[in-house]
Length: 235
Image (cartoon, rainbow, N blue to C red; front, side, top):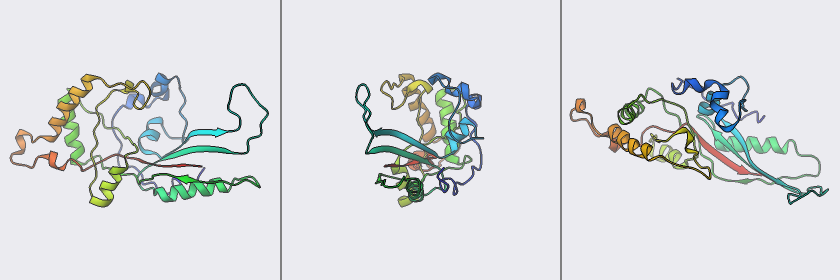
């Protein structure tokens, strides 16, 4: 374990309310043929996804990889790794801790080279934010049912720049289904989600009748946010 990776994580101040029925691992993972989650021991599958950092090996290359097999001793190997960060973590410190972790386990006469890529700190938003309340209410109007508030994360560096440079958070709302298979070769998007998403966003950003002459929230929509960004690297 990279010992410094989770030392600065800020504890969650409140818990999202969405999809509690999927807290059973087999219910959440069954659609992809799995039943036991990987990750931190003693933490539920939804807690890991919503509010905990991750470390992933995205690819490994080394030795003979062609057809059949050969008794080749690999002289070189490479791996691509990434980390999803949560609020309170510094991407530079996480990267440094990972490199120290790898160097401390190198066999004699071996050496390692690191090629770093982009890294951004995570941003978190209090669940009692008025912008989340507005988005949830607008989504209820557009979708015809209450919105489930869940944690989420993604590699969207511009969100961190908005916060760092402009001092503004970002409220990012997406409308889709669990089986959309986002980023997969057979990704899809239902037109129903598209149409209901338009209605939901309109309801979220337009003034409501009981607000009198209050300012249109659409002019302030960059104001709350995603819960995670990713620091990526290869070694």
